[in-house]
Every structure is written in C-alpha cells, then in structure tokens.
Length: 280
Image (cartoon, rainbow, N blue to C red; front, side, top):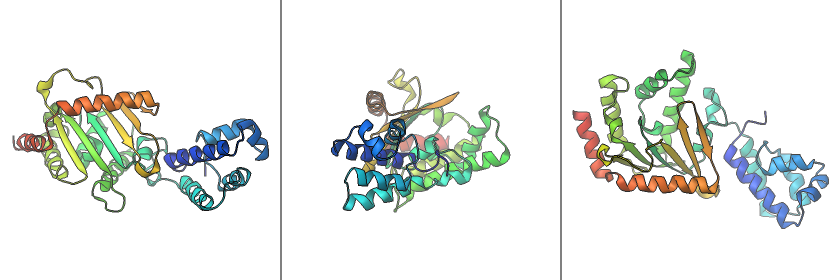
C-alpha cells in the first residue's frame, strides 16, 4: 500500500488523537520521537496525517504514551480503517480527490452557479458536462467518472450510511440545456424527484436577486458528524479545485452560504419552479 492510499479523513482523526495522547503523556515531539525510534520529522508527519499510519506504529505509540484500555482497540481499529483503499479507487480516482472527503462526510451544503450539483445529476447530464471540459479522457475514464458520480448518489437514499444534502442552485441552471433540451428536461425531472427525499433540501436562488454573497463561485461545505473532524470547504473552478480547512476560511464559506440561503426560495417554492421549468 502506498502512502497515498486509505481514508484521508480517518487518517486525520487518528493523527489528531495520537497527538493528543502524546501531549497528555507530557512528552514533546523531541522527547517522544527517540522513544519510538522515529525521527522528529517522521513523528510530525504522522501527527499531521501526511502519511498512512501503520498499525504497528500505533501499538508502539500507545505503549510509549501509556494509553491502554478501551482506547487500544478503538485506535487500532481506526488505524486499520485508515489503511483501507476507498471504493473510488476501483473507478481510477485518487485518494486526494473531493470524493475521498465527501465519502466520510455526514452532511454537505453546496451552492452551484453554472450547473446542477454532482450529487443531483443524471448520468446523461454528468456525461455532457464532462465532455465539455477540455480534459483528455479515454472513453473508459469517462464511463468510470460518470459511474462514480452515480454511485455517490446512493447515499442520499441509504439507511445504513446516509448523507444529508442542502443544495442551492442558481436559477439560470434550470434553463441551461446541458445535454440538449431533452437532457435538461430529464435532469429537471430528476431534480424534482430527489427534492422529495427526506435527506435532500433543495433551494433555488432566483435570477432576480442580482448581486449576492457567492457571485464569484460555487462551493461546498462538508461536515463529518460523529468523526468530530472540523468542517471543510471545497471550491471547484475552471482550472482546478481547492480544499480549505483553515477555520477562518470555513467560517467565511458558512457565512456566504447562509446569505445565499436567505436570498433563495424555500423548498416548496423551489420545487414548484423546477417543475414549471421542466414543463416549459
């Protein structure tokens, strides 16, 4: 297994807990590293989740930090989970992709300007979007990316591993014929169907609002529930994407989302508008 495999979020959770145990034991990085036969830089990388943490390393750290009992099995299980390759690897996608973080999230808040959010797209709509981007993909790669996007959507109706989605869609998206008129109509019908799921709260931001708090770009905010990992923000743009985890950046994203949400139609009004657009 390479250093880039495994669950990034669970690796971060484990790293944070191991750092806390070291601090509770009264050891500094410089004091703990030689006791573990690690360099200071290696221990620092472990505590910053920059490497996959070996189960044997965790055992050594628990011994040195005198942390046993229930924590022993809990942290060893977490270390094993952090090493497991994600489902997206089967689709040829990397572990540092947005999907790796979304998979661990319990709640996603998303605002999109130019297109329907990925979690709400039909396969035809997703394929048309991907074909429009000037990125070289083989037919197999395109099929895999579309299939992965459809797989992600299963969590919206999952009882075992549910995902709560709060989405705000800019109104012009409802009229942009991605995939042609028939493709758009299919997409709008799909939106209306998903909007009725208990896990989905869908809003439309009316075009009449004009200037608003997120006019520059769409973005997502990810929350991780019981994992107690701090919220993260994600921004996708024309030439790449950014994953933001600094507290002040995430607070700004949350504030922008609250403003956009306050400018949007409520779910019932939004659903009615979507249905009218599909009919038109």
